[in-house]
Length: 348
Ligand code: NAD
Ligand code: LMR
Image 1 (cartoon, rainbow, N blue to C red):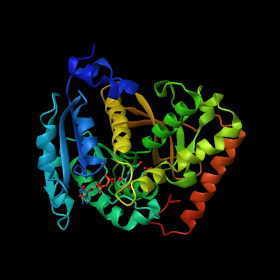
Image 2: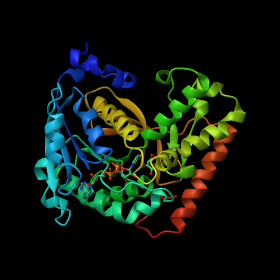
Image 3: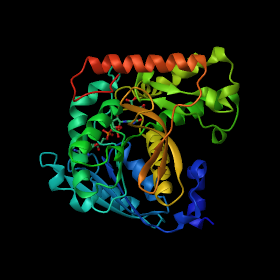
Image 4: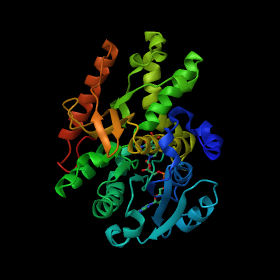
């Protein structure tokens, strides 16, 4: 049975209510970039998970709010988690600074890095954000190699391959590196709810492919509610899902990209991973090293179990529109890969 404090937060978590085993706080979670736009609300939502005993909030020392301040603030929530802040010097390697922060972590979520401004593609963020991610991921390899590392920082389509290759080179499991594409699912669910008038809680649209442009591929035919939408409405719904990020970037007019819906989606992902670790295998589409298609990295339904990625599921049945879209996503990724060096594949 759920504890009283969990019941209070239940509206936030009703889509993925935890199993009874959640009642014992056991997990340590780290949020890198935890003082940022995504980081703060994401840290809050993870600190509200009853299975979490400790949350590390890491950010650089010149972050807008000191990580210790975020930690002190969230440390007063009436949940079991202890929240600890870590401020680092970006000029000093993360491997020299993150031992206490990362040691013992089961789950690391990385929204550290620059967001887009209007007119930019996610790919324009690669050079700066790949360096930031590399520092954090090298520290994960050293201090918590068994943790699931959820990559939120963009461009997800190329940061994930680069970080998974880094793990491979170190002899670690590349499937510990998981690209978080849950926001695309959340958006598709919401847009379908708006069109059909049904509850978003009853809708679960798989979104496969990747996290940029045409690689974002909602599979509306596989959800019983979205499958009822007439075929002529699907292309616009598909496009709106692909452009969800840009919709927010433009509305924020230079002041950042999606933060609150991403924090919600990051917690949806993180809570599912922890639920799997607690003994209840749980599914979420995520972007991982994959043999499901001919693309080396691909998002499809993943089952998270005790040690993280347990099974990567095939794409499943597609209708003819979706078959065409899958070909489009593959073509675009292959063309992008061909245009780039080996350090940067799976872009688009
Ligand atoms: P933000 O600028 O508000 O926050 C980023 C934080 O990272 C800042 O606090 C900054 O100080 C910190 N940071 C910078 N270098 C760091 C380092 N070396 N170590 C630790 N922290 C460091 O940005 P945001 O809006 O939170 O977005 C963060 C990233 O998430 C962006 O790259 C954005 O594109 C991406 N994003 C991804 C998705 C997705 O669906 N995967 C959705 C939204 C945003
Ligand atoms: C999103 O989908 O909202 C994020 O990837 C941020 C962005 O730049 O669009």
